[in-house]
Image (cartoon, rainbow, N blue to C red; front, top):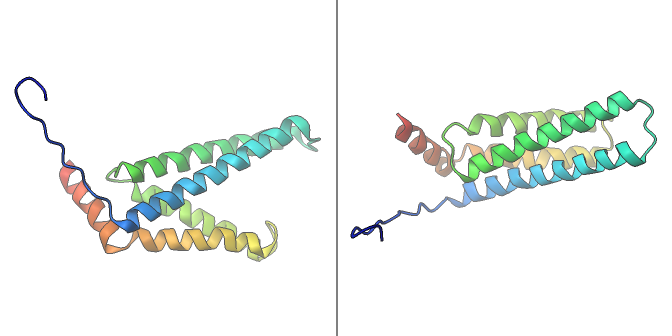
Amino acid sequence: MIGSECVSVAVERSPAQLVVLTWIVLLEAAVLAAGTLFLAWELFVGDAQDLRSAIALTVTTALLTIGVAVVGVGLARRWARIRGGVLLWQILQIALSIGAFQGLLGPAWIGWLLLVPAGVAIWLLFTKPVTAVFQARDAERR
């Protein structure tokens, strides 16, 4: 209670598709964070052939981790225009998976680890319940 008035807060229930999409993106951010920690560890402990490239790769991975984490938080908080960031990240993952399938970025199973979550996330992003949530949020901002 604030003063003599009762404040009621309406809790919006998220559709299951949005919850799963949010968890996928946050899991991708966690995997990127683990990769960043591994690269940082190798930077200090390992014997890098090119130190500048190793530093650049570690910093780039750290920045991607921050970006994907922000996108995940934006999904959880239902930021009105976050869907573009989600779509961009998933398209980048699909491009990396193609490289893995061609043998340029590692074995083919890594390609599947990148392709499947990206495909599911894009599909979930365009389902009617998720689209409706963000259309309603966009209408509120106008």
